[in-house]
Structure formats: structure tokens, C-alpha cells
Length: 285
Image (tube, rainbow, N blue to C red; front, side, top):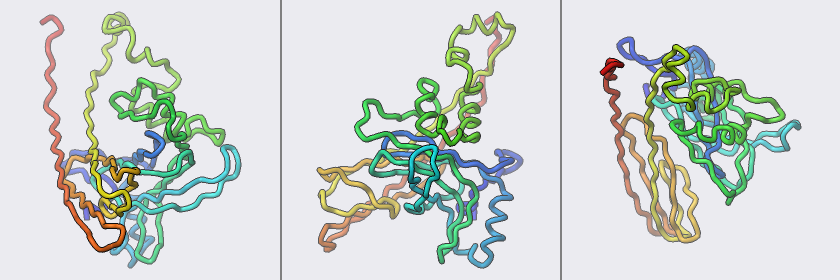
């Protein structure tokens, strides 16, 4: 049940339980979106109650929608596909095609007969055209370097109005208001902070992602975890996955164009991250 439950499950009084539901999407590059969510236990309970007997066979998914029309006008939305996800994580990488396009994501549960119960809806994002001079590939550890670009591409300055969840998420991760200049956090050095009579909290975060790559015949059909993979003209491919702090199994299947031969490779990956106790030294040492 833990894999099905998208709300965090604190253990022994440890772990974070969220007090609201939100889904935020950011653009990484022309072909990848990064979804981040926070969901409450009550939201999952509402889904279970609403789906009734369908709940037992329902699965947690991200619903990818293409948004038609131009910014600032009434937009139509078309469901592109449903992406299976699981509990125990709070973010997912979503591959998209044919840039530039506009997208939105919903997160929720999908029953076997197609009934979808939505837990949260994201902001609208616009992917840049392919081959743009500089692609976006930031993690939170270095997003401050050019967060304005990521924020803008993720709909932060959209005529439809910026997503409050998007701005709040950026401010939480950057640890400052969006309106403040970048050097307010990184410039001036320790001397400026001490002169102000304040010590800024020392932060250190570490994250990881998994890049799976391979090659086959250019006309083959390849899937990873059941999802089709876009092959390059030479038959090579690269797929990014989130790397949660657990063990995950990624089956890769390649089938020849004529359907006669099929090969399967199972990749098992485990991440084990341990946060050590901080060491606080005397300032006079």
C-alpha cells in the first residue's frame, strides 16, 4: 500500500507531512519536464472514498495534457498519456516530444475503467524549440545561477498569471523572496553577514538522478518500465529517471521491427543516502 499511497508516511514521528496539496512543473529542456508534488493524507483518503470499489485496482498516475492556443487566450487541453508513478517519492521526470509545445500535468488515481480522480493540477509550461542555443539542465543545488530562465519557461511570467505554487516553491528552495537580487544570498561573504549581526543558516543539499542509455537497431521498438523510448536515427537512446532513496527495478525491452525477436534487460538500481549529524565548531578555533 505504501507504493500506492502518494502522501508521505512519517515513521516513528519522523518525516514530513504536508498541510496542503500542490503540483508544480518545471521545464528542464525541450524534451523533459520535472514534476514536484506535495500531497496530504486527506487528499488520498478523498480519492479512495470517491473511487469506491474502483480504488482497489486504481493506480497513481501523472496525467500529461497538451495545452492548445496561445498564451493569454482560452486554451483547449488534450490528454496525451498517463504516466504510472508510485509513493515514496515526490518528484518525477516526464519526457515530451515535438517542441515547442505547452503542457500541464495532473496528479491522481486512474481506475481500470478509465475514471480519473485528480489530487492536484500544475501550472502551464512551455518547452523551448529544439536546438536552442542553451538548454536548461539545472538541479536545485545550482538553480540559483539562472533561475529566472527556468522560472520563465515554467510559466512564471505567463500572461495568464504566475502560478502561486510555482513562485512559492522557488522561494522555498532559493530561501529568499523572488524579488530579491541573486547576490543578496550569495554575495558579500561572511563578513557582510557578521556585520549585520546575523548568521545565515548553513544549508547543504544533495540529490541524484539516473541516466539510462543504450543502443539497438534504428527501426526497433524499445520500452523502459513499459513506456516507449524515442530512438535517435542511429538507434541510440538516453532516458533520465528520478533516483529516489530506495531500490527500483527498470525492465528494458527491445523488439525487432518485424516482431520476431525480443530481448529484455533488467536494470536494478538502489540509492542509499544517509545524512550525518552536523559538526559545529567554535568560531574561535
